[in-house]
Amino acid sequence: MKSYANYTDQDLSQLVADGDEQAFAALVERLWRNIYLHTLTYIRNPETAEEITQDIFINLWNKREKLKEVNNFSAWLTIVARNRILSGMRKRLQALAGHTQLQDMPEDMVMETLLVPDKQAELRESYQVLLKGIELLPEKRRVVFKMSRLEGLSNLEIAEKLQMHPVTVAQYMAKALVFLRTYLHSHTGDAVLAIVLISRFTIK
Image 1: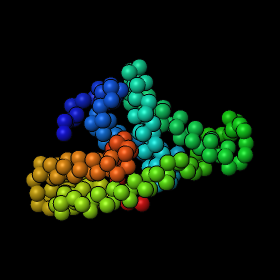
Image 2: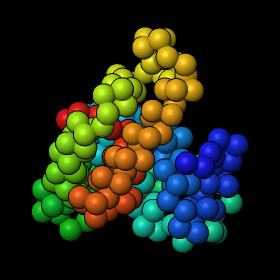
Image 3: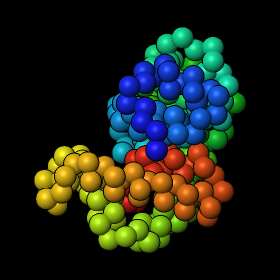
């Protein structure tokens, strides 16, 4: 897999605008934590914050052509994330309360209400597919993947625990990711969703 380590966020965003799925995967991997934590500060619910973060990146891909006009991608994504959270909260409140307009509601009240993402059922089904795919991995790749994604360990930490060279761990992870992305894509038909799920997989 091509390395994008030396690419800036702006560089990656322009590649994504051209439809580069590997660049998108690298961008998700790099920025996921920041967007998730930004979302969590408002949502205050880890599961819901993760689902909203997934939705943000999926929509980023779906509207990738607009990235060609963005000069400061990181700042733009932060604004997009905040607007996405607010928009989702307001729509959910409107559906629950029966109001036609919620523009006058204070933002802190909007943020205190949990958003139930429209894609929740689809995401959970995809997680089940992902679980099956993980069990198909060769033993060492499966162990490394779970330590990385479930325990949140770095490649260096995994290498120390398993007494492997960090490069070997990285190779196992790369091969596991390639297999799981292909497996998810073939079973769900959604390459972008596969990338998002793989990038920050957690058991629900």
